[in-house]
Structures are given as C-alpha cells and as structure tokens.
Amino acid sequence: MNHQLTPYFTKLVEYTKKDRVPFDVPGHKMGFFENDMTKILGKEVFRFDVNAPDGLDNLNVPKGVIKESQALFADAFKAEHAFFLTGGTTLGILALIMSTAKAKEKIIMPRNVHKSIISALIMSGAMPIFVEPVIDEDLGIANHMPLEALKIQIANHPDAKAVLIINPTYFGVASNIKEIVDIVHQHNMLVLADEAHGSHMVFSDELPMTAMQAGADLSATSIHKTSGSLTQSSAILAQGSRFDYTRLVATIHMVQSTSPSSLLLASLDVARKAMYFHAKDKIENLIPNVREVVTKINKLKGLSASTKEDFLKQGATHFDETKLIIKVTGLGLTGFDMYHLLSEKYEIQVELAETKLVLCVLSVGTTQSHLDRLYDALVDLSNTYGHQDLKVETFKPKGSFPEAYVRPRSAYHAPTRSVKYEEAVGEIAAESVMIYPPGIPILIPGEIIDQALVDELVFYISQGSTILSESEDGYFKVVDKLTWPKWEEIDDEL
Image (tube, rainbow, N blue to C red):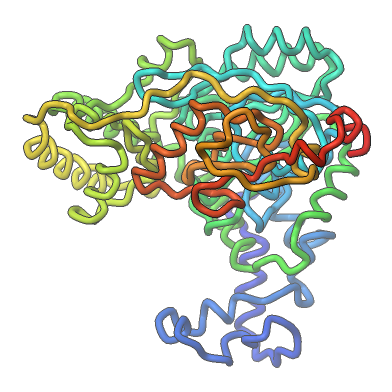
C-alpha cells in the first residue's frame, strides 16, 4: 500500500479550496459566523469543519476516501480491518463489548479496567468475571493480569464469551498477551483488548507487543493519546473470523455519531502517515534518552523512577518505557503535591498523580528539551525537599477490590437511595466511583462497599483529587434493599 497517501485529508483540503455555498450543517457555515475562537485560531479551522458533503464519504457507510483511509490505517497498525472513531476509545470499548456479549453472558477481565468498560457492561448486561491484577505495594498501583489467575477463571467459567485484556495498563505494564491469546483461543473465546495507551507500540520492537501482533480478535486504541491525532480520535482494529463482523459494524453504527468531526477523521489519516514513516526512529531515539533521565533521577535524593526490570521482577512480560513513573514520597510529598508543584512552579504538566507517584506520558512528540526541563525541576525539588524526613500521611493500598454481589446492570437499574460515606459500609453500590485521571473505578455498581474503600475515597478527596460519581459530595448511591426484591429475581428480568 502507498502510505504516502492521505485520501480523506487530501479530499478535505480539495473541498475547502472551492468556493462553496454552505446550505448544510454545521451552523457556523465554514467559519462565516465569527466568534472568539475564530479571532484566535482564524477561520481555517472552521472551514475544515464540514459534515459529510459530496465526495467526502460517509463514516457509517464508507465507500470512498474514508474506506481507503481505513484500509491504509489497518495495514499500518497490523490489522485486517480498521474503523475510525470520533468518540474516543470509550466508544470503541462500548462497541467491542456490546457486539461480543449479550445480557448475562460472561466476559473475563482484570478488575483495574477503565470506566468505559463498566459502562459497556451496564449497557450490554454482560457479566464480568474479574481477575485480580498484581498489586504493586511499593508504588500503590495495579499492574498486569497474572496468567495463572486468568487460567483459573477460564477453567471456572468455560462458558465465557471473551477475555478482555488491558494492553498495556495506564502505567505501561504489559501482561503476557501472546500466551493469553493462545490459551483463550484454545477455549473458543474471543480476545478483546483495551489499548487506549498502546497505539504507538506497533512501531517499535523496543515496546510491548500489540494485541493485533499477538493474534487478538479486536482492540480499541486511542490514536490521540500516543500517536499524534487530535483528542477524541481513536480506532477499532480487527482481524480473523472468530467475531461477528456484521454485528460489530452494526454496534459501531449504534454508538457512533452520525455527524462525525471531519477534523478528527483527517487527523487520524495524517497521524497514520506520520507514524508509519517516522515513529520507529522517533521512539528508538526517545527510549535511550528516557533511560538516561531515569538513571539520573534515581541518583537524586528522595526520588526514584521505575525501570522495566522493576516490573519484570513482579511477573510482568514487558514495560512501555515511554511511561515515566516517578515515586516522590522520599521528599515528604504525595504525588498530588508534586503534581501541583510541577504545574504551578515549573509550567510542567504531568499526566496524573497517585498517592506515591506522578506519571509522565512520553511520545513521538516528546523532545529532549522537555526531558531536560523535567529533570532540572526535579533537581530543584530534590534540593528543596530532599533533606526532609518523610512526614506525609500516605494511603496504603488495600491490595484488593470490593467484593462483587450482583451484575453491574442489575445494580444500576435497581431502586436506590443516597447514604453518607460513614454509613455506607455493607451497602451495595448502584453507581461507579472513580478518581480521574486515570478513570479506573474504585467502586462499580453491584459491589459491596467496605471500610477500606471509604477510607481510600476520603483520602483522595483530602488530596484534592477529582472524583467522578453520580452523587453529591460525601454520599454514595446504593441499592435500596427495602424496596428491592431478592436480587436473583430482578437479575432474571434485566
């Protein structure tokens, strides 16, 4: 295939150069309705924001330039099929799970999944069979899915429709995806992958194997996160004949917008071309520089940066070294403190903070200057705080997740009431509660609230973290047991 081509973007440029009279949507009419954004960015951005005019193809029924662009995309990312998404990988996850499992059918997955997967379970009615991930007690994070634990769940639930794997985790830790794929396929189950943080990995042997390279059936991947397209542009990748292609396409149509952004589609087209020709060199130049800065950070008082070896010792198969994890508690600071200090004092924006660490996501767009500025800031912070004794109170991870009592969909549709945090222990959650970022629920509908969960949530709130839930501050939405019939009966109906 000719990867020099950008079929959709080229056609979009051609369209905008014509003297068109726009009697279609959107309402800004190719920038003729001016606003504060056009004053800053100019009219050109709005001129390129067109709907689905003649010649630009239709995302839901692609027959022209979108079809050509998706074929090039699939080839570049080592898949048989690619489907562009303008609703982020959240949309892709919804489509994967809803097209794979119906109500009460089982999907095996690690518990440290993104909130979009829980939403998909509620919408599909599928039943999650959770595998406890490896808990990194030193960093206080959940890592890879252990192979032996997965084998046990496959043996216990041979009727499961699929196994979903996170490849890699938010923090870059990879499970043994090749062996997982082989084992799962031997049991006639599908392999689905959440690759929101791994779209770039296919372009370098220095990085973990992608789901498509391992032989998985379906994956959803965020091109915007690590491969240079505009935010909210993602893709579904697919291969083989184990999945129902027609049902997948129909489900994508169900959740995909009928008015997709032409800017997002064009950014997927041009990002694919740029990654195909330049990502390998960019990544393989970046990784030695990252290793060098990791070595330097590990010589600073009070700070430590994780290495691939740290995770291999815990049983992980690989680690994406474009994820820079810096433990900061040796400075007497929490990760939340460090997050704000880096932003407010040094104009450095990291991806997220956890109790003990901050995470920096690096990519093909990361420069040596970026790494130098980060290191200089860390040197200054080490000199300022490194002499202090550790006085900060840190939350010790409980090492497990709440116990599941009923399917997420059943709890979501049950009658509910609100209870205060301090009165919630023993109640059944009717909502998801998560810290954002990363958006991994610490509680999902159908799980039993325990004291460790309450303590964890209160701690995150005290650190100024963003809490995503349906309830007002200080309250959980829980199943109202007094008006809820025996759950098995309600479960039969939903």
